[in-house]
Amino acid sequence: MPQLKQFLSVVFFILLVLAISQCARRGTPSGGPKDIQPPVLVSAEPENMTTNFKATTIKLFFDEYIKLENAQAQIIISPPLKNVPEIKPQGGASKFIEITLKDTLRENTTYTINFGQSIVDNNEGNPNKFLRYVFSTGDYIDSLSISGAVKDAYNKKAEEFVSVMLYEIDSAYNDSTIYKYPPNYLTNTLDSLPLFSLQNLKAGKYKLFALKDNANNNVFDQNADKIAFLNDTITLPTDSVYLLNLFKEIPDYVASVPSYAAKNRILFGFTTIDSTITIEPITPLPDSVKTKILKERDKDSLNFWLTATDIDSIIFQVKNLKYQTLDTFTVKARKLALDTMNLRASHSSRIDFEDKFKLLGNTPIIKVDSSKIGLFDKDTLPVSYSYNLDTVKNQVDFDFDLVDNQSYFINLLPGAIEDFFGTVNDTLNYKLSTGSYADYGNLNLTISGAVTYPIIVQLLTDKGEIVRENWSQKPQTLRLENLKTGNYTVRVIFDENSNKKWDTGNYLTGKQPEKIVHYPDVFEMRANWEANENFIISN
Figure: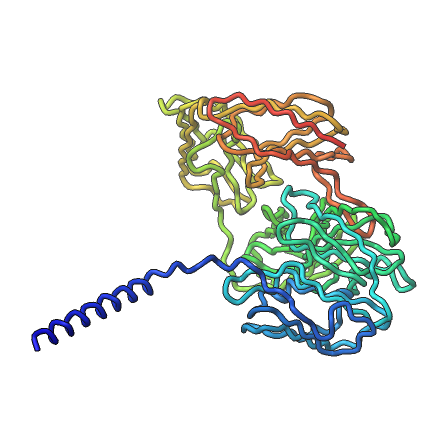
């Protein structure tokens, strides 16, 4: 019996060790290699590249479970269908995709369904990139193609997922077609590359467009979309490669219905503002009522300021001489509080050597009393300054010499600034400080090569913010001093009309935006550094 007990104990021990060993192995799996393979299309009903297509349902079968992601944006059908087809699965996994067509298809037409990167495997999300299903309602598949790229006219980085559209020039086509009807052929650029390819096209004459189609409705909305177009007609077949320049148009002038924004302010909104706009009250105002019009800062709006009145409603005429328009609006009074003076400083503490200190008003500033303004350094010594009341921007600009490692104290006594309503400021105190010149760097920038003057040279941060701007009529080396440390790049605008600003394009007039060239690299500015950059522009 003792031997039997000893034997059973040994057997129990061995089984226990094996069990623990198995548990340990199960608790530390290697996992195997990660699945990086996209799902593969194994068959289709009807088959891909089918002619004389008559089906209403298409099924695509894959070698693993898949799901659809961002299908509405990614799946492009060309020519576009009037009714959106039903596509399954939505929100679940399946080994097939089912597409139910709800349109009566055109005769003798080649259709392409481009899935983009919407089809991903269920486990790892690996996309099946650029899957296309093609069929024809006629006897053959159209086989012509065009390709190219879409760049942004202003920004260095191209927009992602831009619609590229081809309209056939037939008896129904005119300049307004793109505003009303979808194209004959449609594709999109890739998420990571601004390239496009339109395939399975038929011979003919076409107009080529690109849209950043924010509504995904395959037509041009001037207020929302960016557009690119070729001035020339495309004749297929062709072996040309096309470059499209995407830009945002200045919207056509439209005046919005005005309304009281405060008891003493009526807001007039516009899609675009120019100097020819006038606002006139038709309703007679009492002699005691004074009015003033100012542009809303950073907005396409005008503020109509008025002193106290009990009039319930005012009728206005709004004219725009440039567009030769006349609008009439009735604005009814509302129970609102008054807008009161609130001065905002352009700087709260640190000021750079190339900056100017400004006080920005929210109500119209009409008067500055410099006898009530003091400017002192850290030793309380007076600092000489000048100022300018900018009645267009509604701000007071201060100009004084900045030296390194210095503190400045700006003191405004009550009554230093008065607004349109006779309100004056309370006591205001601001403290500014400068750093050391050694904290900054200097840049000598030369623009050469295929340059047509005048040009606008903009120095940008690596985030695209404009740091400095210079307008040049002839070749010169630009010296840009006291630049913060960081990464920079350069944008050069060819100012064709010499108006010292970049002009965008307009489709209906056939005007392309002014040419812009971007410095291909990002360069670093270091503290106490003298940098030299030569931007050679090629044709």
